[in-house]
Image 1 (tube, rainbow, N blue to C red):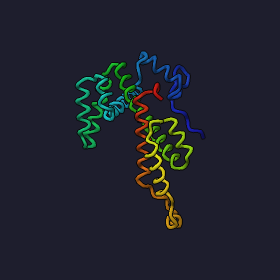
Image 2 (cartoon, rainbow, N blue to C red):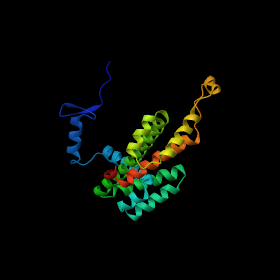
Image 3 (cartoon, helix red, strand yellow):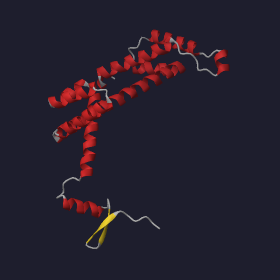
Image 4 (cartoon, one colour):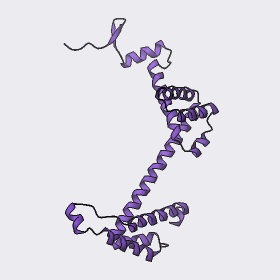
Length: 210
């Protein structure tokens, strides 16, 4: 036999638990106020948001102008290592978060998003630098492309580093027989650094220069 649905009857009509009709009746009963489940969900979300503030960069946090009480509670949360004490303090932070104005809460979310986007951009820049380094070592065409994009590069220095990296990257018979990847020498790391420095310079100078 099929398992009976959970619910109740209202004026002879069956109302399934969690159904749209149930939610409508619940809203009528509470005068449109949020249910206990919704309040608990919001409370958990704000507590989590409060804990995420611990990871926020100082400059972004200062911009938010958070209440002194919340900042003190966050410092305390960072300090506590005991599991139970930390759990209670996190709940207290959540309680203080619920007292913030909606605009401030949105600013907190925006600041965390801004920090996250910054990290993503940093990762993309690192991947781009790794690709340039590998391309420069692999092909002379890449060197021509690089020099077109970055004419102020010290060409002799870069050529010398590419030669060294190619030489150091040649797998010897012993490595091949053992299935080992070729060793990466100092030049390999220096090319990467040179590319990163050029990227940073481009960023500082802005798009009008590049």
